[in-house]
Image (cartoon, rainbow, N blue to C red; front, side):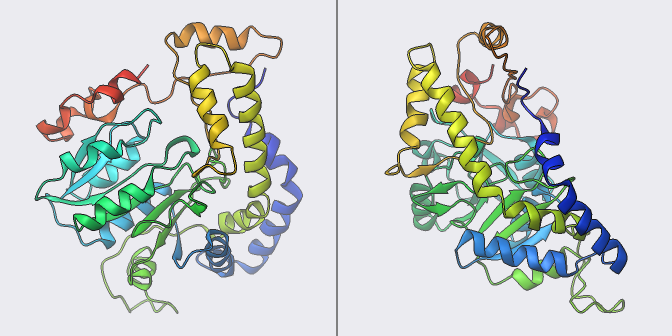
Length: 351
């Protein structure tokens, strides 16, 4: 059976290279914010090919937290965000005592750009588009709206490293871009890790903020602020430096597999959706998808799952975001009353 996740297959292939990194770092006792982190940050910046600074942090969630913190928002300020997302998008807003302003999704399952402006209020200060499943949001429209309404933009690009819109990498359009290095991502490490890209003039401040406010070179008695402990582990950065050399070939392989699935599913109940996937793989498309997940909308998920498992080559499936954040029963008490208003597409696409 083809499993949804088979991490060993990729990581065992690189095990000898990982062992070289481990031996080097252990022999030098180079565990915290050493050469591997600095090298990795530079390599990712070169990969993105944009004038951004890249900061290694403990997780994709922390990169969202640091980006929102860097915006200088105040408690009560609103951040526009889709409800169909992983909880980390919204928890980073809530923990800073900001207010999530939920907006519906379109038929590509990303934030509906036609719904954003109607939700902007005097309290709205930022937009958090989430590039789900390896597919970019329409960043041309989002950056235009943000510019016209004087809003900041923080891209939640956690699942879409390597994805592009109009031949430009996601995570480089907004004021900040948050990337996850979780093992289940297209580009992940062997534990937790994340990256924050920023075009703002606060990169040095955020580098010190991630390390308890310590400037570098480190002096135990010197601080510039009360910071947090969100340092990308030096060992994980070493592993990531190896993986970065392979990531483009891995993305190409994912796109080949997605094209195969789409071609085989043409004419079925999901035909129109897979046609769109095939269109996105056309070189003239505005979208370059990485397929961190291959997501289909089907009327009967259980029946479709049975169909995939009973074929000549069984394929494992799972349900994607079955409970939207805005009406999740265990989260209601943490959200403003206004957050529970209906979101038609978001609720329709929840299995």
